[in-house]
Image 1 (tube, rainbow, N blue to C red):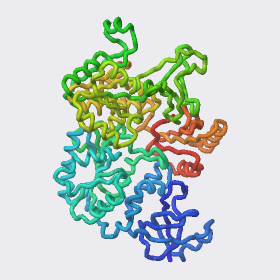
Image 2: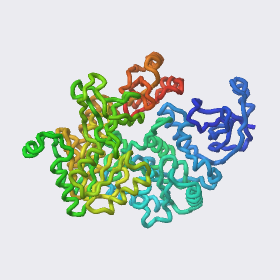
Image 3: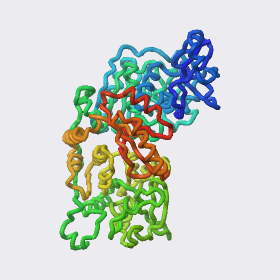
Image 4: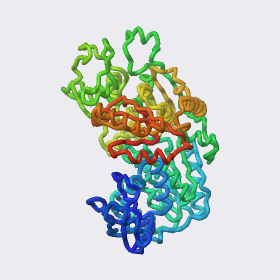
Length: 634
């Protein structure tokens, strides 16, 4: 009999490993079924000792030692994969089991018999370097094809990592030409039968393969893996939105390092942090970075604060949703039977409403978040909807602060753009993609297909529209993006610039931006494809404020009733006082309508993980949310 250390695949357990006894023949990396509290769960074997050598440990254990119930797979995960998960867990102050629970999807756990010793092997001597490529889609994918051919020639398989299923589908159609029999896509939308068939082929094929998948399917380990490609490197889709809070890009970097294989990071605009690492020679350029992107489109910036004099007199200074330039573009699009995509940053008619007399913002009665004005359908009147908690109420109300009826809308929502186009251009076919208009992936794909097959039509979209619109169009216009500048996020300029560059890359003839913030240098940088000056300005700002990559933050959040939450944060601040914490209230309530209080700690990247702080963070109760390198500080 042996004593085994097992990492439980569970996000709710604070322990790194649990001890069980079992037969002598269980190898490290095996997937086993074990008792977890009152249930049977899965775990990964990471260490073992003779029972006789561990008698003192067994005697001092606070609970009765239990037996491993069953060995599900003797060779489930490699030691390199487990080590990468362990290092990722340490960085994000969580447990290895919670990371593995996220990285080993149910589809894989249902096919554990496929993971056999014959699949293991060595990939040869490779250089574990970090490479980067920054270019538009066409040029970037040409580099990827060249890289993959080189790997195949060396008899190495390639894992192509992407953040979403839609990205995987698009990428597969681009890269599989000529290697269709050796290209496979792995993602959560596969049914059990499809996944089992692909898994059988992957594990039986002797030829090097191109596997395109999301991060959890990195656990399908080919013995001949020679490299990882991580595309859409600047996407926020790699960060988890629930526990465990971690960035799957960091795991991929760790996995490449533990396996000793190169990893190639690519995007049309790389993240500021990755560009900084490259400028400091920590990452190598696979090809010279494109710091100025060319475009065949005519680029226009329309200042909505200063319309032409004839428009002022004609409209008597009435607030305009569509500029004369955008109206002319819609006219031309219809006349030439072309396609036009119009972007709006927000849903609804208007993203915010304020009292014209006292300036009070109209907020949700349940969670205090600003409400969005939506148009009623049919006989239904306009209504306010809270996009945080879902509370809905009539828009026919007075100001709660001064009882005034003078409630004015601010900003342009996508519904308002749609109303204006349909009023001004009744013969133009208009499609719309946002979370209210399309409730399913199938509906979104159908909307895109109908738009592409309707010459002269207009597609309105939020970021969701950008997500599904993959083919270039004749013209792209930005109807409203100014509201994003008010978001309290130190990475918001990066997000805005990335979206603008992505839309500019889609446009073949005209790229138009209308804004009331025309003095912002971001627009000039985006219209000219000027990544180098954008980067210089952004990195200087981050250096001045000591934002990433010069430091990073650890945010510890509690939520509940105000008095209780503030008391909890004060206690956490005292518990962590040697690490110079800053205790402050969140700007908005949680999704459940609870008050939020935060404790913020700033760390030098060279000093993390800090074992003293890490051990303290792991002592915090499960009700406390710990986010290392969070997206938002508020």
